[in-house]
Amino acid sequence: MRPTIGIEVHAQLLTASKMFCACSAAYANAAPNTHVCAICSGMPGALPAINRRAVEYTLRTALALECRVEGTSKFDRKNYSYPDLPKGYQISQYDRPIGVDGGVEYAVGGTRRRCGIIRVHLEEDTGKTTHVRSDGRDVSLVDYNRSGVPLMEIVSAPDLRSAEEAREYFAALRQILMYLGVCDGNLQEGSMRADVNVSLRAADGTPGTKVEIKNLNSFRAVQRSVEYEVERQRQEIAAGGMVQQETRGWNEAREVTVGQRTKEYADDYRYFPEPDLPWLAFRGEEIEAARQALPELPAARTARFEREFAVPAGMAAVLTGDRTIADLFEAAVREAGSATPREVANWVVGDVLRLMNERHLAPEEMHLTPERIGRLVGLVAGGEISVTAGRQALEAMVERDEEPEAAIDRLGVRQVGDEGELTELVRCVVAENAAIVADVRRGKVAALNVLLGKAMKASGGRANPGMVRELLERELAEG
Ligand code: ZN
Ligand code: MN
Image: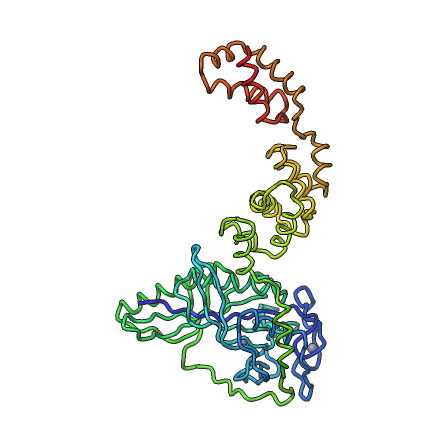
């Protein structure tokens, strides 16, 4: 039994206004039904107009996902009745989506895989229904603020084979949309939702019955629900039963999928062309210009970082995880003086990201410009300050919006590399530790490290350790 998994992702586009009207699309913190007009509340006779930006974003995404974009595309009505759908139909795309036949690269455990993309199309979101208890009665409240917000739907081929692949595909897709600047990728707020199709293919190749898990909005939910569903279907079949074609939901608290509706209610949307909207037409040069304007995407950038900066694959992937961090790293490399790109990468991956996570800061809130990071790493690489001092300085830079040199001076952690000063220090340590010095002279190598430790301590950690060791060796050889 081999799992066969496909994912449909709905992504909210980062447009200012809704898909077919001028209402604001920023509904998150608005009072209910304040971002509503005749069009998005479904008043009879109201006429929709297409949001140009939403079309551009979808075209951009289709091209980034290596889809074929035909010269024309159209909108269709998908008919169904639900309280959060005031028109009684959703404007979507049926047989002429904006993009078809693409693919996404993603990595699982260090291996690169590709998942086909069947289609990328544009549609509108629904309103939101909340069921509450009010004055001793069960009531349903409908908020149309989200009604008509632009949604892009990306349908994958059933190329995924495991829960982990499903998770990594979803993560890769999110990263691409964020790189493209078309979606904020905020999973908690529902900016991206995944519907996952899971079936088990028999050993002889016979496809299994497909079960759809709806509305998953975290990487964890995608992975855990697929794991659960694969196992549930396996057991069903092993027990001699049949998997029922149905839609299931994911119960986060109990970590189980729960049946919602079966095939008897199979969707029949009676799609037909939306008569109130013109067809979309893409000129060849328009498509070409959009293709040229695509940013370097995460997979390509990761490969380039490995090649150009000689950083290991895992580290390159961490660096490119967030576009702002990747930009910061790349610009810092140019400012880092004698430090190698690998050293800059160590600092960004190890310390900058650690601070960012520990303090729950966005990259923009770190006060870290490429110049600041580059200069700090350069100072460590050049032996001006120790690694420990560098870490202290970095924290100060983040906390106090300081330049690295200012932080280093204020903390008093600049390394002492002055030979006269260090010779003085070494002589004191030798004079005060006659017994240990005798041990060294008897050939006890470890004893030298004890002296080195004492010298470092005496300098308040600021002495250049390499120079101290050299001076100690010289001093003891002479004595
Ligand atoms: Zn409206
Ligand atoms: Mn849809």
